[in-house]
Length: 128
Image 1 (tube, rainbow, N blue to C red):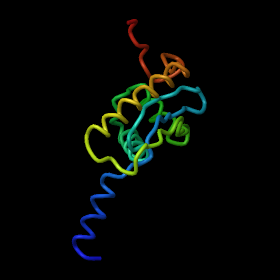
Image 2 (image 1 turned 180 degrees about the vertical axis):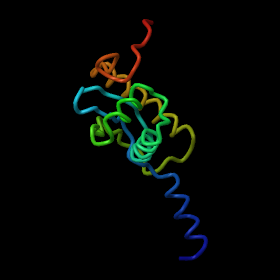
Image 3 (image 1 turned 30 degrees about the vertical axis):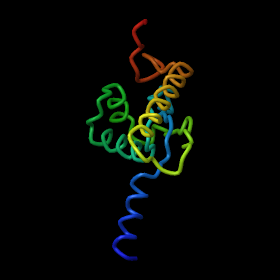
Image 4 (image 1 turned 90 degrees about the vertical axis):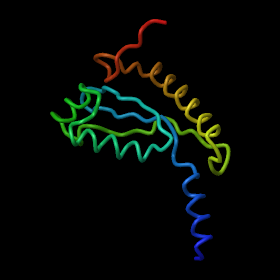
């Protein structure tokens, strides 16, 4: 492959979509959920497992259960995939569009599963 072809292929890959969506980490025994969304679900999953295994996740209740019960006590779920409208992200506006949609989907899943207090790892949102 010629250098300019390699550069173009690299650029297309860098701007191509990864699996986007809302994911959940479920504690099998308690049924507690940790819900989040990502532009790159597999990358976020890897980062989540890494920080939990290192004991550095920001969610202390999740970290405590992970440390006590181990990785095998949890299941990772893709709750909803967000399909891209175009083949690749050409600019920041395209990216912002998906981030906004992902946040809305995440809110819907939080409302559906109610992963608060004893049911999950999230703090109940303040009344608006």
